[in-house]
Amino acid sequence: MGHGTAEPMTLPVRGLGTRRQRLQGYLLTGPTRIFTRHGRLRSPAATWALRVATFVAIMLFWTLVARGMSRALLVPPIDVVGAILDLTVRQPVIWGAIYQSLGTLLIGLILSLPFGIAVGLLMGRYRGVEQVLDPYVTFLYVLPNIALIPVFVLWFGYQLELRLVLVFFSAIFPLIINTMSGVKSVDSELIDSARSFTANERQLVRTVVLPAALPFIFAGVRLGFSGAWVGVITAEITTLVSGIGGLIVDYASSFQTARMFVPILFIMLVGIVITVGMGRLERRLAPWRRMATDAE
Image (cartoon, rainbow, N blue to C red):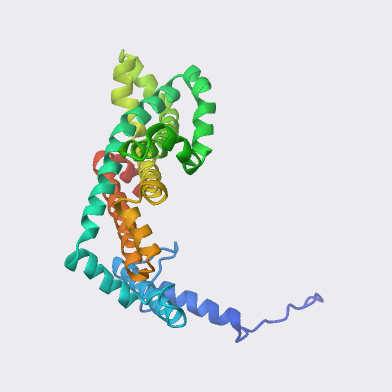
């Protein structure tokens, strides 16, 4: 027998660490199997169950907080539900406001999309263009658009042009930056292969560069939409007092708190619908991106 020091035998301690390990093992291998070993939810049913549970918890917390506050400051969720019915069915003023705000948003995006993609493409393909424009793009991108509202009011007044300019400035720079990044990230071997088949610059851009940069462009579109939607609401709240932003101001100034929450919720809903729609459009136009993500 050796004379070395024997290792003391350790026994599991019934404490916090053991309970935590049991819980982790139960979530990974137990009857419910909520999470996979990579930390993802195992099924869509589990995802929706947790989402519903979170929503119920938020509503209960909101109700409890509202009980101890004045109705002029905060109302319970049930009052907001009643206000939604009032503004969508009984007195459907919300639809006209949404139509006005979305019209401004879509016109501004239609104007900014081709310009932003074209400038980003030029900056990504030609180093000289990037060196000239990059300082100005960076400066205007980091500048809060709300700081330019007084200037835009002096130039364009309080008409539709003010909202369009705000939408354009809010959407254009994420488009430029993401398109430029996508163009720069194109695999050089793809470009060399296209040139070996005598592809000119126009063919190279159309068949190689733009398809490869499409996921980056869609990311820029999503960011641009978010900024543009913020620009529309900001213009309506601060200057025009019209559209869905104007409803927020009207109801807040008259302490109709329940009704004030209705346009806020619809602003969120419009953003979610358009973001999800653009995600599906991206998967349809760039299916190779989804296959690459699944492969990872």
